Image (cartoon, rainbow, N blue to C red; front, side, top):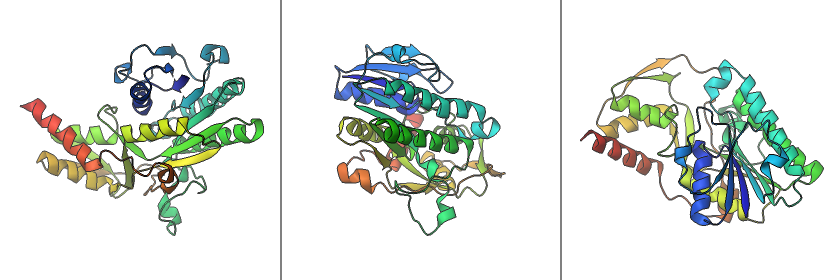
Length: 310
């Protein structure tokens, strides 16, 4: 079995490569990564993987060779960056996905193209308050250039499936957390700021609600879906654990035994208030997969922080 993993040195992509290593050490893996600021090869602990340092917009079918699966994580994903400059998001998320689809179409032995998307493509659930959660049939509504380009890439994958018979799956996952996450992301940034008595800027009133899942739990489901008989489907992957941003700040402060120092700043442009995905479809296939709760993860990380100061 040979698997192409784009963005395989990113936070979620690298954990997926590690999951492959645990589940099938004999699998051949080619990581395609452009080594942007979000990439870190040290996250991967699987020996003997192949690596192609290339922009997904420039990859050719000859570069990829023969393979059974392509799992597409590579994306520009920082919403604030998309507000400052949307062009890289158009190139990577839309043009890059299109190029990979064109490559995959040429692979007669392709078993599945797995496209990793996000719950942000559903937009702000507060705009449709009569729906508590977004199912896979929910309409797509991009609030930022990031979510809009991810929605566009989802539609490209579905179009390739309908028009060319490309075998695909699309997964839309809530916010991931884990010990190897980039320091710019919400959880590690809040932990560091409180531990070091730094002032935390909080967008708006801080009452935005997000859903959180452990990255290892997410990649386990992705691996199972990859090997399943499922095709031509969309799956939401969530935990049901939802918290307000300000609630998380206070929770981490309490665990650290410190009062957080924060200031409310002007809200992000187009900021969504609430995300909440209905994961019942994938839970029907895999009813039990949550190994680590959000609070358990925070306690583990804070225990590590405190021990490093002793």
